[in-house]
Length: 93
Length: 262
Ligand SMILES: Nc1ncnc2c1ncn2[C@@H]1O[C@H](COP(=O)(O)OP(=O)(O)OP(=O)(O)O)[C@@H](O)[C@H]1O
Ligand SMILES: [Mg+2]
Image (tube, rainbow over all chains, first blue to last red; front, side):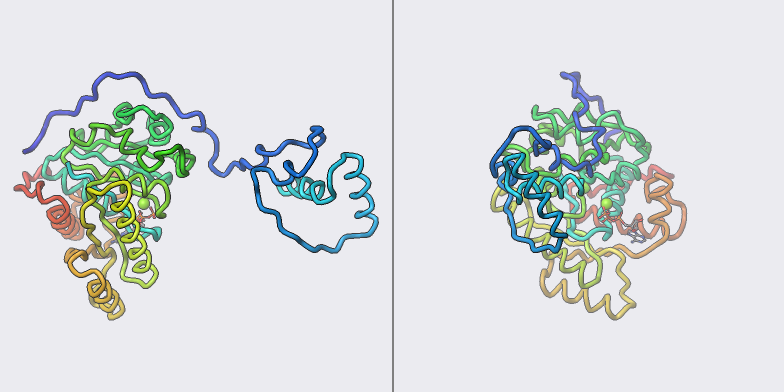
């Protein structure tokens, strides 16, 4: 069987462009998943975001910086771990 | 209608080349061909001379309505008998598990569309992820492309396993696969050894037809024309290769070539 007639698509309700057509596939989505600074959100739910696993990491930082971290964490009423995660996340995004 | 998923886990082994070669062979016999480009790189789309398509597979797979793919059909520049469901960069957004029946998205979107063509070819991205799962779920058979190298053969093994998984889960009707070796040079001892290994492991699944390495392939792809229209000795040789491969993967299309170029 051979065919020489052009194929004609039937009329049907129109397809629309996908909402993410112009979003570059490399656009990070994890930053949008997390609330920004000072949202009044407290507790580790923010740190872990979408039930992301946490790991321990040892780093050497100036003693004065650790003091500032502790003070700021106290002001925000969040843990030092959480504050550090937020700062690192913002810095890396 | 035969719906063939062209896949490999490894990149750059020739999936798009084989897809376009088979489309060219079917067109030479005046069959109606649909090429579904499921690779966000959009190489099949480009090779078929399609530039800035209105709709792409990203739009199709973002819309859950059955049969919606018919709205995205685009004519190729080769011939009116060859149509495309094009890919664009944004298709990468769909390459993830979406909804409860994620691997059925393509099948649902196509609805009765494949029945309107004599051959449907699905060009997969170089991974066994969600797009390839969708291709295998919508396909009637799988064509695995490999090269005679250690890594490529390992990738072919993984692809064959993926076919088995899909057959056991979302598409029990998926037929036996064919493995085609691209860039084969039987004068090279290492190539002979690798092809021997492949035959030992997969026997008759490995096609006797192998695609030789020829400059005419990138040249015709770059020019956006079918290999059967590439006027050179290499073009003619490759046309014969893809004719044989088509005979093997779609025996129903084994008819006297009408010689549309003559
Ligand atoms: N037999 C061949 N002879 C010469 N060049 C070839 C041959 N096969 C493929 N090529 C060239 O190698 C490149 C990669 O081939 P192709 O795009 O078909 O691979 P692919 O598996 O589709 O790649 P990807 O995984 O990126 O989708 C292309 O430039 C193509 O023109
Ligand atoms: Mg490709």
